[in-house]
Image (cartoon, rainbow over all chains, first blue to last red):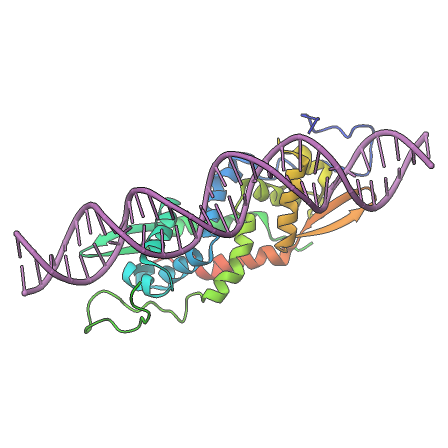
Length: 123
Length: 123
DNA sequence: ACCGGACATCGATGCTTGTCAATACGATGT
DNA sequence: ACATCGTATTGACAAGCATCGATGTCCGGT
């Protein structure tokens, strides 16, 4: 990448390079802020974990149930739950011997908003 | 995971383990089907690429512009575009010397639907 | 026919990540 | 006190991934 500057088409009004509504598009900061959320969700196991938890009573679920829903080690499930929790997607509450994870609607709607904003225009 | 079977709470009606509305939740198949889309989007660079392309005129953008929008090698941008294209998120069209990528609204709305369906219930 | 520019592909490299077995921690019941 | 059960943590390993430099390919102009 020799050119560090971008705006001018090198010569005149060449047909390429309509200058991308950069104002309306996402900044690198924004992207780096949202990407971790998607990264946390971008795994089949974690995606299903969130789905199971969201489908649970009160939007929460006990780890003991989640463990049995997969053919994976308890350590692996625990790891995935930690990832989701660290990403801010799940809340964690210890209730007696058991631990319950609950979805954080704010976090999920943040992702939903992302696609409402960025995506859907007919043509 | 010693237990390969799941359904029975080992003893009686213990308070834990409300059995998760497994019918309503996402199957492993579904999760494995959607996760690749999220994986493709779960990178700051790719997320911004999609954003830039979506913000472009007609929901498309020339690679020449995209290259200049990042401090990354042309090879790297090309790689990311390929990932997005392979995931079915972008269309590719060669127009003269230049290549234009365009967003596939269907793919994006698939992701959007995912969060509409799974996410937002008040309490 | 040649050169130059726009993208793609290849091969290599260092970092991240999904998974497991083993172990540690903490609460409960006996 | 002790054994037990539910969950988290640690350490290790293989696989995946983001990035780069170098090279290849295709196209348009001279």
